[in-house]
Length: 99
Image (tube, rainbow, N blue to C red; front, side, top):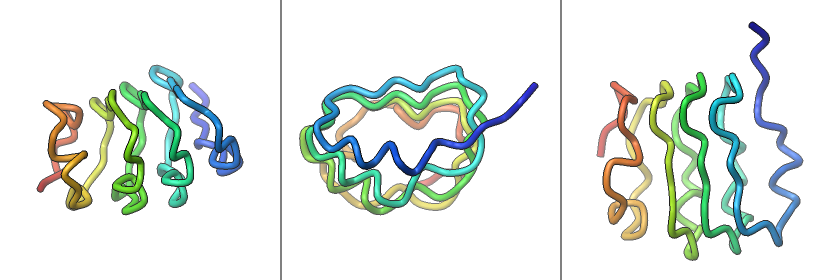
């Protein structure tokens, strides 16, 4: 099974409002400048093989209303943000990810 990384160029789509890349056998990391997608309302990267720290720029996504990063292999701490702390269980099944 071929594993592919999230293309960094996706962060140039600054008017994007929804991004669903779930169940795509993605590996690697979330692009560090994902926070440039400031109009994003929904981000679903669940059920992939992503494994990295969560980028701090996630906390810059103020319009994010729906977030699902479950069933990946993220590690480290969740970036501090009232928004990220408000989601219920979007980080499930990331065994070494903590607050």
